[in-house]
Amino acid sequence: MELFPIYLACVLWGPTSSGKRILMWCDNQSVVAIINLKHSKSPRIMDLVHSITLINNFTISATQILGLDNAIADSLSRFQVDRFWALAPTASLTPCVVPPSAMLVGKPLYNNTSMPLLPPPQGAPTRQVKNIF
Image (cartoon, rainbow, N blue to C red; front, side, top):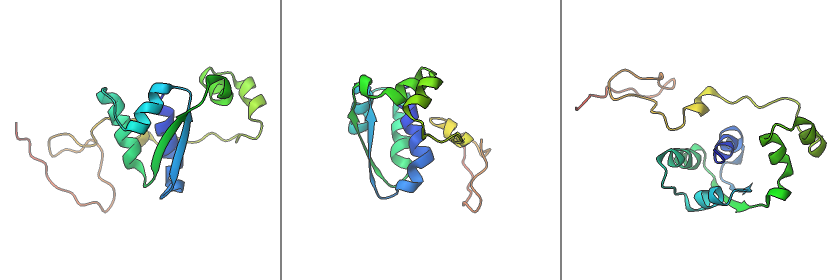
């Protein structure tokens, strides 16, 4: 769950960081290790890790920040809106729109028959996938 906001940040702002090195600050030591090692024993977490590493052309690493020093993110995670605005008065009033496709992480875009779950991107080559079972 702690890795998902980092994944969303990569989805939303990754295209502006192509070719760059990105350093994420996180107060969760396990998430920092997963990002830096690019590995987890959990298949669901690996879905996120693969998505993060495949989203854009950038290198991502993480460093741990003490929870006490992570007050802005902490206020958001606890739905303390007044505290958030006090800590980040210049934050945008317009929320970021999360594309629906970002919520498909870990779910196949196509099933194992010729029927796609999602239409292929416009102009993408199409092919028939046969069920071999």
